[in-house]
Length: 318
Picture: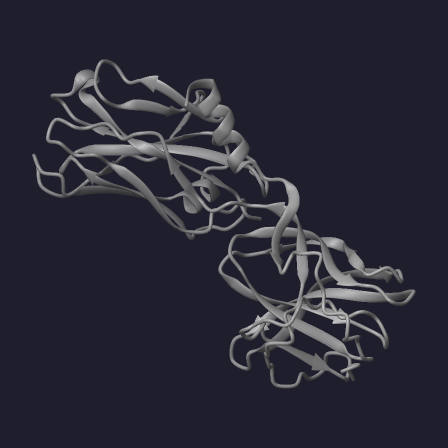
């Protein structure tokens, strides 16, 4: 089987959070390789955990030694068995004799979700350079093989001499990230944004943006922009307008908590809001679109009688 902020700030933020065709995830992305191992006539599956949602258009492996046409797939993960589950997409891998990074362009882009486990499946033939880095001091990733065309898989294994190498190329989505500075309210609150879930251009729920601590018992809302970040004083107070107009206002809600205390909070499931509001700013949304969002709430003693949180930016998964 084997051969054994201002304009500079705005530009920086826009660049950091824009989607791009690039190497979105990789393992052992180096020019070194283990030159003593070649592939057998089998399907090799390499397990990986994807940190952030990515639409994959190309998979690259480090191989060579022969002139051949192999195939590379992306498979989902069976959490019950710990093995590959189902084919998600594939593309031909033409191999040349020179040992180097060589790639398979997928027939159709494959959208993978951040925080999930997947498998690269290499439908190999005898004699190609195995896509392995040098022997390590700790085990490499889990991998397995199939000798019946993916109908069944051996129990996954890992070892120090099987440090697999691969690259996933595509539209990279960075995790949501905060920026700008929260204003200090009349009671000393600084409302900071956080998020849970994955922002999506199609999901009907599952991405909640929250602001806390907010002045208790105040009305507030979230507003967003698709035009980028901004830094502009909000009246004469300490708050800043951190999203670039035009903006879209979300639903008004109560912060709950205690009047005069910093124990209030606001929350919005942005996916649900987007799904139920087809005519909002930026619609219809597409995978890779970026959004900049901020919270606004009542604060009567403050200048303009309101205060603002800091801001959050995120890119949309499919």
